[in-house]
Amino acid sequence: MADWGRGQNASAVDDMLDEENKRMTENLSSKVTRLKSLALDIDKDAEDQNHYLDGMDSDFMSVTGLLTGSVKRFSTMTRSGRDNRKLLCYISAGLVAVFFILYYLVARART
Image 1 (cartoon, helix red, strand yellow):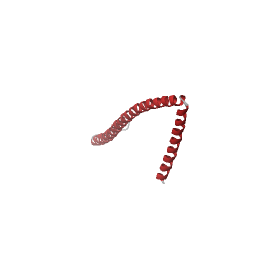
Image 2 (cartoon, rainbow, N blue to C red):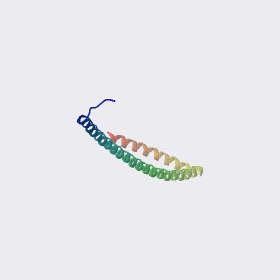
Image 3 (cartoon, rainbow, N blue to C red):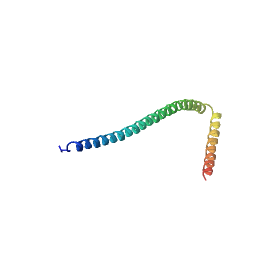
Image 4 (tube, rainbow, N blue to C red):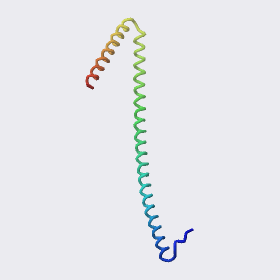
């Protein structure tokens, strides 16, 4: 190892190394604090997103129930007599017309 000298010179080197160590310790401490803050923010964001996804899951389950019931009623209506088939054609034509009207209105609103 290198000989740093004797007496005052060695004491000055030790003081300089202590100051550098303190500075580096403070720098490391500030970085650790920032990382901890980021980790807590990420954790909070993940919890919020999980809560949002849980809400979406329950919403999709309720929509699935509604659609299942609608499909069953629609199937029952199509299997029954001829009069219901006419009604079904009118409803289908009306829905197609409403779709095109809404498409036109949305396209016009964008311009």
